[in-house]
Structures are given as C-alpha cells and as structure tokens.
Image (cartoon, rainbow, N blue to C red; front, side, top):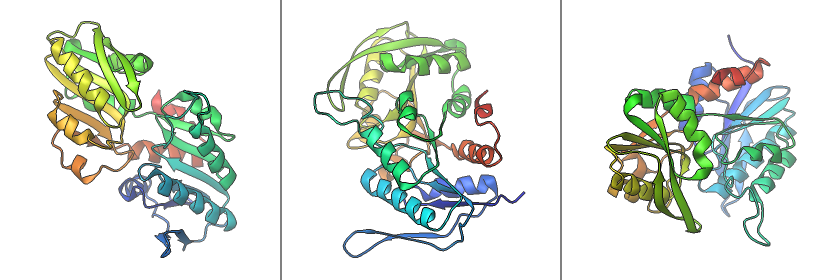
Length: 314
C-alpha cells in the first residue's frame, strides 16, 4: 500500500536512503542539496510536502558539521513548506560521545546538538545505538533508539558456534551490551579492563574471563580509530583465543583505523551501514557490512501507522 509520506535525504548516505525506500516501496523525495560558491549550503525541495509526514534521512557522520547543517537546513525548508510532521532519521548521531562534562569548563555537545535539532523544527528523532542511553533525555521530543544487535547477532550466529564462543566487552561500560549478545548467541562473557591515557587513546590491561581455545567476538557500539579494538585483539591473542572477530554498529573508522584493523589479530570486523564507509574501509578484506535499512524501514512504517516500534526487538 502506498504510504502518504515523503522521504528526503541529505548528501551523507544516499545508499542507505535508497535502501530504506526500497524496503518501504516509497520513492525517494526530490531534494537538491548543494553549495553556493562560498561554501554555504543550498537546499531546494522539489516535491510538495504540505501536510505530509516527512522523514529526513541524514547520519551526522564526517564531515559532521557539514552533515549536521544540511540536516538543520532541510528541516527548516520542510517547516517553511508546511510539512505536517518532521522526523529526523539519524542512523549515526554525531557528537554523541560528548554526553557529559569530563573536565571543568567542558561542553556537553550532545545536548547542544539536540537543542539545535529541536529548535530547527524536528518533531521526532529516529536513531540507532546511541553511545549513551541518557542522550534520549537531551531531546524535548520523542526519540526512538533502534538496536542493531538482533541484525548483528543473526549474522554472527552463522559464523560462530555459541558453545565455543566468548563475547567480549572492550570496557566495563559495554558489559550490558555484550551480555545481550552472549545471551542471544548462547556464548560466554568476558571483559577487558581498559584505562584511557587521553582522547582516542586506550590501553588494554588484562582479561576478566576465560578465552583460551575459544572463538571470541568483541562487541562495541562504534569503532573510531580502532585503537581500543586492536589492543583488545592483541590482549585476547595473548590470552589464548583461537579466533578473534569484532562487531560494532557504527563504523566511524577515522585516522589510521583501517590500517590498524588490517595489521591486527582480528580475523573479521562486522559493521552495519549506519554510516557510509570510506573507500579504504570498503576495500579492506577484513571489514564486512550488514544492512540495517530494513530495521529503519519497519520503524518508519510503525511510526507512520501509530504502531509499536519496540515490537521490532521482542
């Protein structure tokens, strides 16, 4: 059945937008997002959105500032065109790691970005695997935080034998996430004791749990520079692990991440398409991508029909 909605996108991730539309059987709305000669963002929406439910698909990934501004300007354009309800579909929420004061006079940028999105005119946010659950409380609007775990678990189940596998959290903060994967896979659980010496710098110290002669799967919400991941793999190899895999929702993969993964003890790194891969990452034989476009499509369908979104994860 044709859905009376409009799905529009910025320039951040056209492939995911088109895949979501294919799942829904809805054409992608016509919106031109370009630049003026001085670099300012120019937006023109060519479809009628008056009174329609509009879903703007735009992860705020690198370049984060450009993609965030594209989203805000698209929202403003829809608002001024009398759109009925505007939902920002943000598969990857940039600035999410700045969710608390870590030093005196430091900003809480995740809250600032939430305020900007609200002020621009967004009525609802649809995102996936926020870095910290409390970020949902930063928004003065409904937030649906989807989970990639069921999709990644289904994929991992075809690669490992749960009885011979240990799911590993790379730090204490990710234990709850790792426990969910371990339960779904019927696997054991281990934790790596990690201490940071600075931003994007980590040192794996020792393993809490038995990984000897086991297949291990390191679980995290995102992979940025891959420093944590590479050091965790090295520690697990030293602990006698047989095979080492990793799975994460958001493949940020900045700086030397691809090189670190290539040179690491990791056999494979499984990520979702919540944000686009850089060419070097796409060409890396150790990195495998599974799509979450179907999850977003079903969530959009549920929101539009006033059905439960949580039913997707029962």
